[in-house]
Amino acid sequence: MTAFELSETPIDPAALRVRLARPEAGAFAVFEGWVRNEHRGREVRRLEYEVFSEMARTEGQAIVEEAAARFPGCEVLCVHRCGVAEVGELAVWIGATAGHRAAAFAACRLVIEEIKRRLPVWKKEHFAGAEPEWVDCTQEHNPALRREEFHSRQARLPEFGAAGQARLAAANVLVVGAGGLGCVAADTLAAAGVGRLTVIDPGLVELSNLPRQSLYTAEDLGLAKAVAAEVRLRARNPFIAIEGVVGALQETNAHARIAGRTLVLDCTDQFAARFLLHDACRALGVPLVQAAAIGWDGSVNTFGAAGATSGCLHCLWPGRSPGELAAAGDCNGGAVFGPAVNALGLMQATEAIKLLVGLPVASATQTLLVSWLDYSTLAVPRVAQPGCPVCDTAAGAARAAAASPVAEADLFVSVAELERRGVAWQVLNLEVAPPSAALARRPVVAAAGMPWAELRAAAARWPTLVVCAHGVRSVAVVRELRAEGVATVFALAPEVFP
Ligand SMILES: [Zn+2]
Image 1: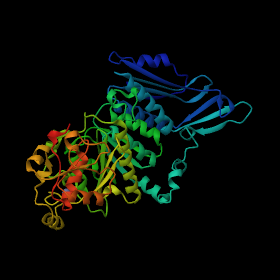
Image 2 (image 1 turned 90 degrees about the vertical axis):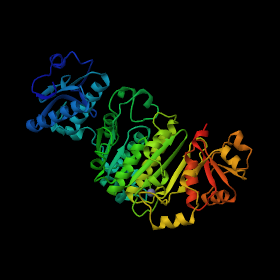
Image 3 (image 1 turned 45 degrees about the vertical axis):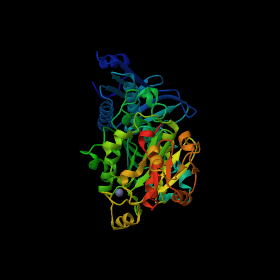
Image 4 (image 1 turned 30 degrees about the vertical axis):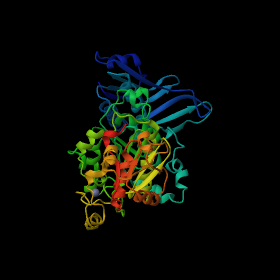
C-alpha cells in the first residue's frame, strides 16, 4: 500500500488510516499539513491549489516509493489536495507504517520534505481585502535560501573565493563509514558545499553510537546509518546532492564505488577495510584521506595527493598483512575518547576541503599524530620504505643501503631484551605524563611537542626506546627514524603494552 494521490475533495484521514492498517505494522506516523489563516502577516481566507496533474502524480509516486525503499518494511500513503481548500482543511496528508517507530517517523519526514521540494504545485492565496496571489510551493518553502548566501562567509576567505567554492561544488566525494569519524567528516563536507556527497555504511544506529556519532539521535535507533545520515545531511545543506548507500565496501564493489570520485575519505575502523580502500584508490588514481583513532590518540594521512611524493599505507605497516594487524587490534569496539574521534573527523574533513580547493595539505607527505590527553602533536615525514611492495623505487633502494641493517621485524623490543643486551639506552617519551616506573629508571627524553629535527638528534645520541600511551605514535616515529638512518631506535614490543 505505497501510493501517492491527488484529491479535489476534502481529505478524510480516518479512511486513509484504515487503508494503511496491516497486522505486521507496529508503528504508524502521520503528518498533516493544514490550510492556515495567516501568511507573512496577512489574513488568508482560502487556498486554491493548481497542480500539474500528470507530473505531480509521477513525481509524487516516485517520492513515496523512494521513501518506502529507504526504510525496509515501510509503507507510505500520501494524498495532496488540489482545487479550493478552506482554512482548517487538510492540504496534504502523509501516513507511514513500519515495524518500528523510527522508520515510520523518518519516512514521514522524508516524504513531506521531498514533496515541498519537488512536487510541481502552485497555490493561489486568497487574502482578506486584497487580490489573490500565486505562490510556487517548491520555492515558497524558504525563499531566502540562496546558495551564495549559504556559503558567503567561507567564500570571503582569500584562499577560497568564488573559484574555491566552485571547486567544492564540482567535487564528488565518497565517505566510507558513517561512525564517529564519518559523521563529523560528512557533516563538515556537506556544510562546506561539496557538490556530490555519498556516504556508505552497512550498520544500523545503536545506542552506544550516540555519544560520538553526531548525525544520529535516539529517534534513529535501528535505522540504517547511511539512511539516517542522508536525511540529516540533506537538511544541513539543501544545495548539494546527498546519497546514503546501505552496504559495505568490498573487493567486489570497491572499484565501481570509487571510480569517478574526486576524493575518498576513509572513516572505517578496521585494517582490512583501510588496506582495501587504499589499494583501490591508488589503482584508480583517486586521493584518499584516512584517519584512525584509538584511546586518546589519532592520526591523519592523505595518500595520492597530486604532486606529493610520500610513502603509502603499506610503508606505514611494513611486512604485516591486514589480517595480522586486525589480530593485533582493530579500533572497532575498543576504548575510545569520543571527542578525539570527532576532532579527527574534523581534521580529516579539513584536509579534504583544502585538497579540493587546491591548498597544500600537511598530511600529504606526513603522518599527523595528535593526542587529546595532553594536546601533543607530531608530524612524522612519511617516506617510501625500501621493500614496500607498492612503492619501492630506486630511491627507496638507495635509502635501504644507507639505512640501518636492522630488519623491519626488529622494530620492536621488550625492556627485558634491552636489559639483556646490556647496552646503555634511553627512553624517548612522546607523552607529557611520565613513563611507567620500570622505564623511569632510565634517562628519559621528554619529547612531547619536540620539533622533528631535535627529536631525531636526541634519538641518534644513544640507543633509544620510544614510548607513547598506545604504541601507535611510537611505532610511526621509530619507523621514520630508521628510514632516516637512525639504527638503534626501538618501540616497545606489543606484549608489554599495559
Ligand atoms: Zn609504500
